[in-house]
Amino acid sequence: MNHAVILMPYVPFKNLFRNAKTRKSDKSISVLSFNVYQYNKEYLKFISLVNELKPDIFLTMESNSDWEQAMSVLDTQYPYRKKVALENTYGIHFYSKIKVDDCKVNYFMADDLPSIEANLTTDNNEKLTFFGTHPPPPSPTEEDTSKERDGEIIMIGKKVKEYNNPVIVVGDFNNVAWSKSSKLFKKISGLIDPRIGRGFFSTYHANYKLLRFPIDLLFHSNSIFIEEFKTLENIGSDHLPLYCRFFIDSKMNKKETNEENLDSEDLQEANEMIEEGKKEEGSDR
View 1 (cartoon, rainbow, N blue to C red):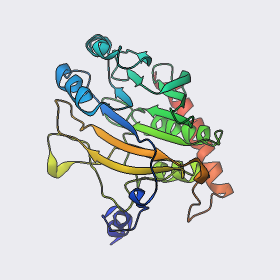
View 2 (cartoon, helix red, strand yellow; view 1 turned 90 degrees about the vertical axis):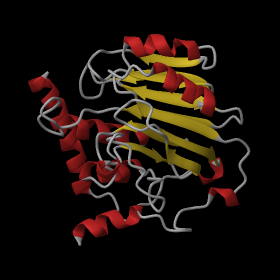
View 3 (cartoon, one colour; view 1 turned 45 degrees about the vertical axis):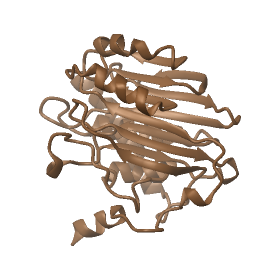
View 4 (tube, rainbow, N blue to C red; view 1 turned 90 degrees about the horizontal axis):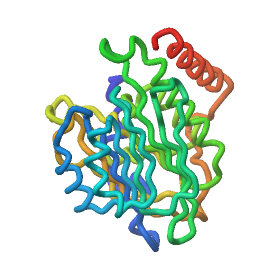
């Protein structure tokens, strides 16, 4: 029964979410997010997917130097780029056709766990802030605990609060949307989970349809209206690509009001998650 209550919001319900089609969209923005799986050599499948979909922005995770070299054929199409090629399965690459005013790489929890923070200006002169993240999962081959993952997620949630313009956060969270830290992230950031009322859109493991979980997540601010949200076909990784198309209505730019208000206990728990994540880095790396 408890599981049913937790998962019920993610069951598709007609008209439960705001219907973007009823609002005027001057220009849509599309985002493609994909954990490539570092050892996956199907470079051309991904490049073909980008050429087919022509996303305005795409983010890759686990992209190492081999992937960076393969994706260089896309450089002319995407004049704004931030490349962080690593061989530890935490490389990350950000490509954009939309003008990037500034872009930086953050290392919130560890000096080998990068994330992306970019400020963009659209053709309609709308400001948009993009965060791309890939914190480590708790597992025998990765981290003994979830402390670094949770600390990273919460740190980004706090960073989101620094911005008044529309924000989108994308990446392989190594965490489901209904987990404790994901829900706390949502409360702190004030962002919306587009899966609510739409479905699970499970992405991992790509090879096991009946044992697949939604760990590649996307959250957005209230001024962003989702027009299309979907997973794509398996192209060689253990993750399915995640695709989203949306538009911005700056008149609606205000943080989502959560049903559960953020209280002092939430803030204390958030700060503890960040500190524990940083301590974990110091003891394990």
